[in-house]
Image (tube, rainbow, N blue to C red; front, side):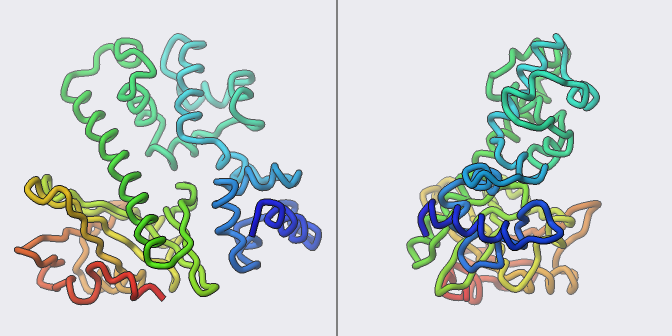
Length: 297
């Protein structure tokens, strides 16, 4: 499906909508493969709707904006205010947002993309877009190190998504990244069936467990959803990557059976490595899930 065919399909969907003003993801999924080609050709639903001259919802419009643009917006707003912008400053902004979006930004987009406004500001600092002394003059070295770790972790997460996308393509899928806002990372189609993937990475050099957000898990779960845990091995094997490919219903069983810890708004999955075996408590994961791409069906 080329770009013009995507636009034609979007216009066709729009023409038959009755009560809904905007095309939603549910509408998009009414045509097999359309969601994949929207993301493949346009990156985001908002971009595709704009190309088709169709109205977009506030959510779709916000999805057109990249993380880098959001950070640049905060930087510009900070320079205008001469202090760190607050949630109220963003709501009162009547000028600067127009450089990046047709609509005002909501504080919620910074929560969904970066984990909150404060973390977004820290991320600007970590990439050097705002001078450290201008953001939080009293920030201690320990906090700076923490911000640097979070920034490094973010790039490792993106690298894991690219690894999985490449592996899916190698295994005969048409795969592409999808926006972070929908709670899933990669969409793929094979044999006219659509699959969705949430990607998490685990670095065995620091042994921090995998964390799943409860709200995202509950909202995005289903039979066509898979979790792929990209395992980064220790220093002596740093060139090697392993993949645990877990169907949604299996992770749900782990939670029900007490193999996964629950803490506040997170599920904690603590995978251990014993020799060449991966285990969740006493459950061996190698046989059924390790690099088993053929089980995605």
